[in-house]
Length: 288
Image (cartoon, rainbow, N blue to C red; front, top):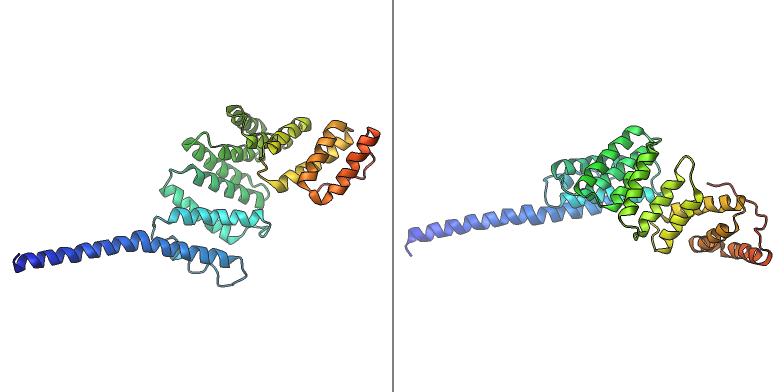
């Protein structure tokens, strides 16, 4: 091999090395650094540190392979904060996270779960703004887009049905949830949301709602334990007032599982019912 060939080969090796270095930096190192930076900032954002979540440009640019995960987790983390009760009003990071996820789905409109998450976050914005109908309509659009990509995603259909109910479109919500149940009655979670949405109706059938939610819980589905306990408080008051002995006992047995701290009270009521064959007098507490 002559010197000219050696020089060409050496130049090619330098070029290839540089290309591989750029590929490694852009496709491996930068996404890794973005992810690490995100998890550090999001964890410190709720630890009382004033400097948290400043200088975030590097988290979102350049647009690397990590952007989908970062933006999805950003919104999901904010929803977790609200569900846990650590945030109770509109938080600036919620607004930022939604905007960043909007950017992502505009660029990568292929993943239904991203649209469903965006819908749930926008529904939360509606809730934090006194059931704002503009936010509810915007959230509906995201559910429709997600279901267009995957019409059989049950979590998307549940959220969509609740969104329609909150818009006051009771008939549309019932159609969505009943269709979801009819597609597969073996899914306990579908029964849960059928029951929940029944309770949200103008004139709910609480007997039917209890039956559906009992089916779900017996099948191992309890998507929202806090809501479930509130629902069984409603059932407790309702079936006590109606003197419905059979269903009142069902409610008591379930409340023993949902609220075990009060088991002594529930057992005492059940024992009284078995002894006397009737519901004893109870001072009902106002529902929260």
